[in-house]
Image 1 (cartoon, rainbow, N blue to C red):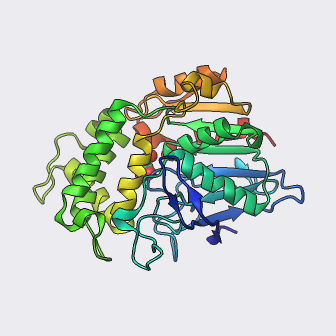
Image 2 (spheres, rainbow, N blue to C red; image 1 turned 180 degrees about the horizontal axis):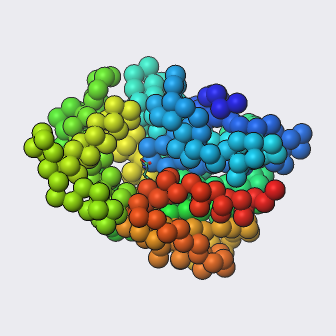
Length: 348
Ligand SMILES: N[C@@H](CCO)C(=O)O
């Protein structure tokens, strides 16, 4: 369990037009699927996350699990009774079809990779669910970009989602989010190594991707935390400590993530609007029948709680606030609080 598996899902027509001739999905599972397939839950990863929700780094896994302790025997996602699935997202770079995957001519898709939306990503996951024989999820759970896919599931396929856990995310991209994400994309595209998106296999535009991650990482943490932690400290090497910290996160991401995927996935978040084609956000949320837990981080400056409040009101549930100094990254770091809310959604 937890080993990466693959499934070929065939062609996919895309929301914005065009299609992909074939889509491969990489996914991991934990626990055992019940004979009636009624014990399955789907976990949705965020922008640079992947299917490795729990477990150590190692072959095939660039990083250790991003929600440690959330899955396992007796854990909030209790594998003594639940079957947990997490799939790498369409457009990503961890085994599911994305810009660095081979196109039909054998070369990487690169700049030819089409625009994909959150709805397209969920359509792929629905096809994966069909392939696994799972008609209805006990719950779909996610934070940040993962929360968008979780909400899209509950709105687009209410009959297939019994429970929804929506964390540190929004129903529609804000101008603030689009602004920071397009600035990050500009940083990637400004790197001469980007080569219009058709860079040679190898390191690629690591300078541009690193600048994008520095900008993004600032939005993932709170100003108060950064100030308390780094203040005006200058290190022996002459760098501000906070600059050195951002340099470190920039280098780590550039070493593990594909720049083309970064642009494709941030664009999917830019175009996110659960109300598109559904009469607006409120009408879309009215379609949800899942029992729902909606939660946010009080210090999140990227996905401020007002965005989760909109979703909570639309679903008729209270907003659950997690108090954390860490800002948006609190959705990854406050695992005890997140776990307690998951247990409320999926009581044993
Ligand atoms: N640290 C997270 C933040 C975005 O939600 C990521 O890299 O995906």
